[in-house]
Amino acid sequence: MNIRTFQIIVPLLSVIFILWQLWRVYNFKTKWKSVWPGALFAVFISIIALFPDATTNWLAKTLDFKSNVNAIIFVLIGFLFAAVIILYDLYKRQQKTITKLTIELSLLMADKDDVDS
Amino acid sequence: MSMLVKDNIWIFLPAYNEATVVRDVIKDLKSCGYKNIVVVDDGSTDDTRKFTEEAGARVLHLCINRGVGAATRAAILFAKRKGVKFMVLMDADGQHYPSEIEKLINELQKQKADIVIGSRFLEQKSKMPFSRIIYNRIANMFTYFGKSTVTDSQSGFRLLNKVAIDNLELELDAYGICTEMVWKANTKKLNLVETPIKVLYTKYSQSKGQNLMRGVQTAYRLIKNRLYEH
Image (cartoon, rainbow over all chains, first blue to last red; front, side):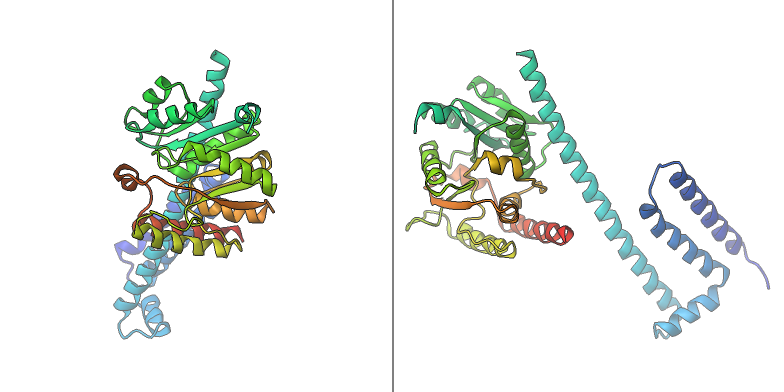
């Protein structure tokens, strides 16, 4: 079997990415909840890179697509859609945090005004 | 209503860029005998804060514009910390009459209520623009999901007693807070009643507030918030 360049680069980058994420979880810089979608995507891409024809043909057969290219595009759009939902949820959480901090700050300033007067 | 009661009432005005009218609103409130007036400045970029201080009212300043819901939450938390017995929430655009606060107080005492909402629909003739009537009717339907029925879920003119102040834990940032308050009042078994109020609709006040697009966003946030709760 001839190993092509992308079959080395993609799994290698995926392993580095997953290890980096694990290191972040280990050092409490992130949570498992935030890591698994990215890790799943990295594993998926690695499998496709290692076994491109077998994987895409299997996907096409399972999802009943005529072409394996269509099947992989469909699955990747699914991943993209999931990523948008996850990022939107993250954005909303950040918004909530900003509001909470803004309210806290205003109350602290009010307390300070009371002390000053 | 005795002066003693009026001293126990804190008026909170969530305001965003209301420099044009805020002084007059504070002046009207003061002329009605209310001393404890707090303008919750929701990150205004105009002179709302300066004019409020000049008019002799207190400012609770949110450094970033976070929406009327956030301003209301800040007001409730402020009231909780200060041990306020009665708080009135009213719009800072001058559409509510300060003289009608007494109506809310009387209703609260008469019905032994925890929250009184000033309803624009209980009176026979409402001068509300037609588009807003439709909007409000649709918004009211959302309160049914919280098993509550009110005629004016979107009214910004509200009176809360200490029980309500201490028990309401609101989460939304924007206009959805009006409906959320009705839902949470029901969940916390608070006694919520309504009383008819008159509203002054000016070109200025109509340029503010809710519209259809905001309504759609509010509905989405309410549904999402409700789903996450369970």
